[in-house]
Length: 524
Image (tube, rainbow, N blue to C red; front, side, top):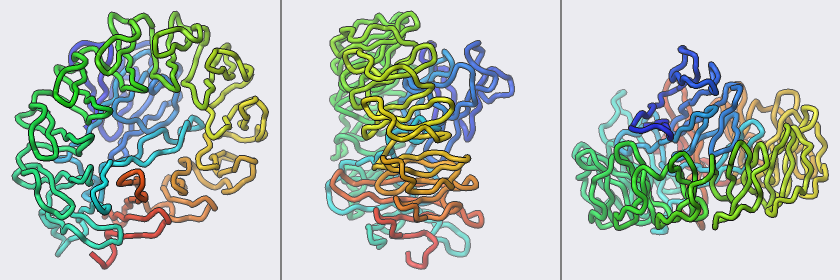
């Protein structure tokens, strides 16, 4: 279940998100917000399987995610979304006991990162690692595929190895992927955990159970959340209305609609009601009496609340705002760049894009303008280059401000793995860093390359191509694609889902594009 939670309101006035949620001032919207900064039809949030895509509907005052203007982007748990001046926290924690993606093969480690968003791609997607180094990789399968006489067996989830062989036979009402050597499973009794041999190592006694992260897993009993260790010992008593995975030694918890932080012993580090963002480089923004400051992981206020707005730290500096102007502070709260810009972005590769009077350029970490403000639009530097726009056309500059790829494209993204998506005559293709066309413009939309593959779209249907432009998965077949990586040293595996004759079908591929397993194959 996913929600938008107002940051500047008391109580728990959260907004539940459905398959498609329209947001704006018009009474015809799913969510009506009475705020003059919000357009009649401002934005929409669309569910795509286990992810949510935010789309701005050409609003007057724009939509921002974590302080950055966006047109279309996949949002993740903890993101801060601003519709005009209305600020919300996006919350999404899939429930192991409830999660279904058409009852097909799924895994719970999804791509995290900024996807291609109409020229605002900042970096390619990243495969998440579950930190498990306990033996071979196992891939989760669900089993609409184990159907006899049109009757789905009652315990459909199991696991295969990377050769497609069934290792743990489908027997569970639900299961999640292996994380840190254990997988959450569920039957009619409750939820617990199995090892990679299929043995139950933590009894099925919980109302809900979630993946392990940093040695602890969230569990639910009597409607409240706590945490257990890998032996099943209760480390944090169930007492919280909501809770999220541990990250860097802390977990976000919520009570009465207010967020706080706890450590691995259950000690409250940040009292509920102060904490509303995610840590970045050891610090996090907090809002107190209408002003923003920063605390560290002990709850100590490192930067006193004094700013009208503040973004996360990036490369040692954070964007702050006062009286409608933006500048930068360091981790001690010292003002490094005086608030003077109409807009300012996070630092990327030592440079930050700033805007004044509708023109954008770049500054260094001392605040020196190193590339003059002359561009209608400009992106973050990625792999040494950034896209810029003039007279309605996009090209690319280097860090000296030299135009290295001429301004000729209708749209452009950010470089990833040496290639970048560009748009010509309404279609997307890919060029390299010399400007040579590697993949001819032919696609309606695309994501950047990741692990040698790019997701592309034709006639509203998704497919996959390699770096030579060869079609690996034909458009029209697949609805979802995700990557799973067991640990940082192990290969990635690609999961895809398609719909055929009203039936959901899934497949796993290796990193070379070879199909490992398909739910509609003869082998089970």
